Every structure is written in structure tokens, then in C-alpha cells.
Length: 425
Ligand SMILES: Cc1ncc(COP(=O)(O)O)c(C=O)c1O
Image (cartoon, rainbow, N blue to C red):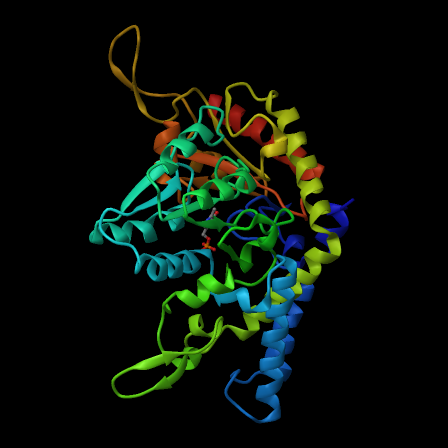
């Protein structure tokens, strides 16, 4: 069992006050806060061990290299992968761009990449770059209950896509997708399977080898680690068969004025000076999460999601976007206040005139919650096509993590009742 109140003490930022109120941070899907151990590990690196890695043969540089490679091994163990399968990148977005570039080089006119309607822009735009060479992009439908339409998935696989890339947990509607079921179906048609783990690796046990996917991508900053470090985990044979993404620095074996040959994996994909301090911070974050236990992390978030579901009915006119079953939902709570569809022009049934619908705009909800010391996200959550699919312009999103408590959920609902009253005036 996780005690969110005890955990809060490990996070210096959570003792800050805003508008005279203690900060209730409910935006961990955007980025998580950092525990003292992560912050200290980064200071320690710069105070005692900083030198460029894989280059110097003096002791200090070797120390930096040892810490960098130790962090890789630690992160690999955390997601049940081999250390050589861990490529450090800046974040999920860069990881997906790397894959779209390097795997995309092998695609030709008429080939298909299969995504889903609930992807983040980071898992759409890099693939859209391939449209220039005639690659087709197809999307698996999301059903009205916010789960993936598995019949549509089976149908679209008949197009024999070369690549399937799917989020394991949606950052907007929270749906946890059945990746374990989806991977063998994709492999049946010889498609490579990519898991966007930005919202799953921080929140639940995720095993790269257990999922048997070809690639898994995630960001350190969403899992208590620092910004600017993330991972592409790839099967060794796949990484070996791919061309590098960026050129220069330590990614080469030999360079002449005309050409170059590539280093072994994972170094082939790590061009230029790396974010060594970031990797050490990520390793400290992994230690922190491992100490809590990822099953406990998931259990704790489930408790908060269930409490949220229980309280939702208190607010008349709250429209919730996500699966009803908390068992298949991550710790995100997307909603709108007001009638559906919110903040759009609609036709008044009596007069026939176009009128602005009555919903409170999510930015107004978020600004009002801020006055209560509560930090939530509002907007399209980098998922504009999904907003269109749900027929709204935006939503308000509260997202939970290990340092949140039932009391935080309580404060959110008290504040939401106030917001409703404010806007009803
Ligand atoms: C599902 C999903 N994929 C990708 C990303 C992009 O992550 P980053 O901004 O760390 O690259 C996010 C960020 O919110 C996300 O939620």
C-alpha cells in the first residue's frame, strides 16, 4: 500500500503554496514532479562526476561512462529488457521520430502504417511525414465506450500494414489498450509493433520482453525523472537492421571523407554528447518506483480513479470521457462541465438560431481550479483528431500519480462544485 501523504514529503515542490493554498498537483500526465533523490542524483553528477562519456581515458571520464552505462542497465531491468536494447533519446516524441525515420526508410509507395484514433500527435505526425513517399496511414476506430474497436483492428490488419503503432494508455481518455492481444495479431501479418508507453511505463508494470512487441518508447520526465531523457527499447535484431537517425559523435565505427560505418547498438542511435545527468536522474527515478513496487503504484492510482468515479455523480452536468470500468483506465480523468457538446455553436431548437452552448470552457475551469491551488490541464492534450472524434473542442484533465491522495480528489470535487456555482451566477 502506498501512503500518498508520506510520499508528498519526498517531493520538495509539493510544499509550495499557490494563491495561499497548498499545491494539489493533478497534471502528472503532462509531467511528473521529482523526488529529492532524483534532484540530488543530478547535482551529485555535476558536482562530482561530470565529464564527456565514451571518450576520455582519464578516471573522471571513465566514472561518467560507468554511471551512464549503469543507468542503462537499471532502466533495462525495470522494463525487462537487455541493456543493449535501450537507446537513450530526449523523450517519447524523439523516440517515435527516430522509429518513423529509420523504419520509414524501408517503406515504399502504397505501404500502410496502422495507428489508432486515440494517439497523441507524437504518434501521428512523424508517420505523416512518410506521406510524401506515398505511405498510407490508417486508424483503428475507437468505440463509443472509449475502447478500441478490436473488430476494426482485425479488419485493418487485412491491409497487411508494415508497422502498427499504438499507445498503451491514452493520455486523454485513459483507456488501457489490450497490447498483449494486439501484438501477436500484428505479427501474424508480419507487421512490426510499436508501443507508445509514455502513459503506461510510469504507472503500471510494463515488461518489454513480456509484451513481445518490437519497440517500446517512453519519457523519463513523466516517471519522476528529469526532462530531456527518454528511451526507445528495441529488439536487438530490429535495431541492428535499422539505419541510424542522427549522424555524428560516437555513433560511428569509421569515417572517411566519403562515407561512414556505424557503431554497435545502442550507440549507433546515440549521436553527439548525451544527456548523462538525465540518464542518472532517470535511474534514480527507477530506483524510487521500484522501491514502491509498480503493482502498488497501479493499485494506488486505481484507488484514486475509483474514488473519482464514485464522486462524479455529485456534479450535475459533468460529462466524463473514458471507459466506465476503472480496471481498464489509467489515472487520467477527462471531463467537461456543462451540456454536450460543449462550447460549440448549436441550433436552438425553439428559435432555430445559432447559439453558443452552455458548457464552461475547460480553460475557465482550469483557471478557476488554479485559484483553489489545484493544477490541472485543459485543452486538446495534443490529441486534436481525438477531440474531433469526441465532438468537443477541448476537455479539462486531472491526472494522478503516487503523491496524490484521496484528500486531493476530495479537494478537486469541492473546488469543482465551487466552479459550477461561480459560472451559474
Ligand atoms: C501518449 C503520449 N505519447 C507521447 C507523448 C509525448 O511525450 P513527450 O512530450 O515526453 O515526448 C505524450 C505526452 O503527453 C503522451 O501522453
